Length: 273
Image 1: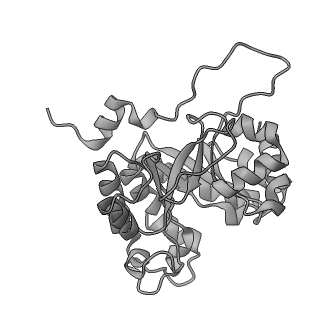
Image 2 (image 1 turned 90 degrees about the vertical axis):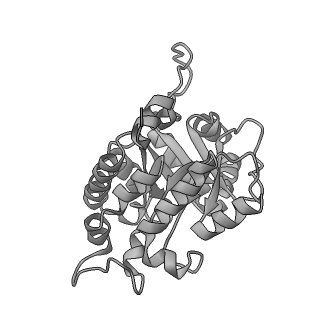
């Protein structure tokens, strides 16, 4: 019997590898367990721990619920009570191919993030055709037993020479949805991170875009875990919490570079607990 990839995902339980685990009995004195998954860079997690150890343990103390992004050559070093699943960050599919061929990925990584954007870290060819390179990245990673988080950025619509150019007067959010990039990401990924954080200051725009992209991702792969973006650089604590609460989503990628945003990031997580 031949099974397609979606059937294999369901049968093997891979699509649900980040489902909630049963928790302990009720404890009226304990903070509520987060209902969302969380993804963040290693620098963000370390700064969060310095600012608020208890909240960081609550959100990043279970590898089934939390993920930390680090450089492929070395898995992140974190406090012993912080045990998120490590994720190797890639901004180039070619870089993944190189590292796999040369055994340059820390074996602690069983998940890789592909984050193509309109920046120099992503090769021109990949910026011009992220649909092709998401497929290549996903196929290569899965062939090596590595799960995949796809995070194509909206600004890929600004790439010069893109194979699917923006229409006159079209915003990059409209381009993102029209070209079905979230659906393509879901077909070849196990997780799709919808980079909606730039819209945080207008909750209705954030909600409309995230919901539409989430529907597309689910259409491409009904088992895919969908994340949305939050960022201390894009809005206040109150705006981030309002944006997060405006959508039904599996979790969030929290972006808070460096120490200055750690206190705000901790406040966002407390507001979502």
